[in-house]
Length: 145
Image (spheres, rainbow, N blue to C red):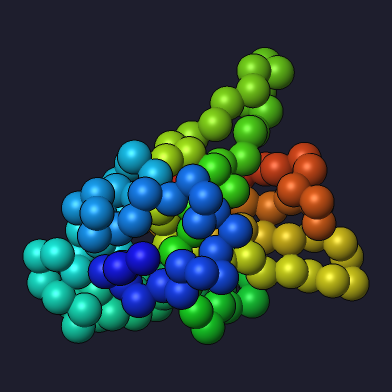
């Protein structure tokens, strides 16, 4: 497959569901892709600059929460990072779109069995905690950009 961001599609677990970045004008799963949107307008350099700025902003937030910083952000399909959170009244909600592609990473704190997930796009940053199997997710921070 031909991609905008240079992803190695043959190694992707979603290649059977993916319709291809270039073939779909940047919507391989039917939703928005932050990488494709940036690259189509400003080129690869603009996207890399955006990722670096976003990583710095995320690391500032992680430090404020006394969490380890991240070295890299990855393109992540919403289906895999769209966790279901329990609100104060017991209602279960998801905040992301399964068909979008976001930037994010996972920070594992192995000695306590907790992971922190970071998901972002051009409009928000979400930091959450969850068990190593994705169980019991809780929002640590949600910031509109």
